[in-house]
Amino acid sequence: MSAAKKLLIETVEEKLATIYRFPLITSAVPFLMNKEQIISESSEVQPPRAAVFLTQVEDTLEIGIYIQDELLRILDTHNPHHELNTHNLDAYCVLIEELSHFHLLLQRSEIGRGVSKLELEWQGEIDKLLLAGLLMSEQKNESCFKSLYRSIFEDSTVSSDPVYQEASHYAAKCWHRLLSKSRHHRQVAHEIMPVLQAAYQGCWTKKMRIIQGL
Image (cartoon, rainbow, N blue to C red; front, top):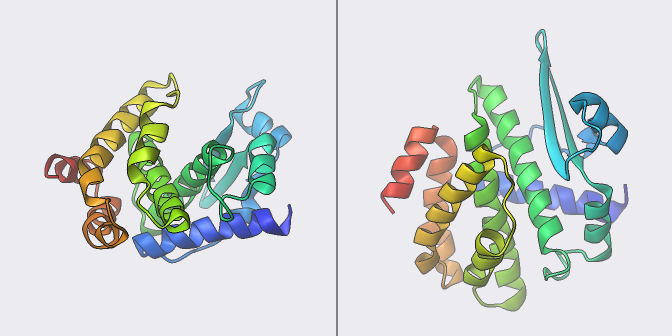
């Protein structure tokens, strides 16, 4: 792995840890899986674009993260931390989503709490717009949340997985209600972050109450 890709992954991880105030138990970098490993673990002929693999053997938790080589090449060629644009937005969102899954699973395992697939997917969808929005807004010195909302939730193709569709629906609903608070960077820090931080710590029922109360 190139130093640039390693730094990109670690920077996204550190951003998630800072926002949600959790300790970074480990980086995902040593747990990256190649195509052959993910096919072996998932028993699929064709691997997904990206996935987090998790299993428990007796008292040992085994975890791995897979991101398609083509997506990593895009991130290497068009580093989003230099410029986030149409060339790398999809790949960057995939990276954010899988790192979000990876670290939420680790945090819940550390405290002995479970997490449903619906909650896991919802968090990934929330984090895609949050981190991409913060990065692009900083680069352009103006709020980009509204345009990114359209790209991520309205113009993209949603997986046929019904759980993912439900998670995307609730994440879009949540962000739609938060968009009015994202017109300026200071609003994001003071009005959006506390909402998402509270939701991160809560169970699915609490998350739904938070969305309904926006």
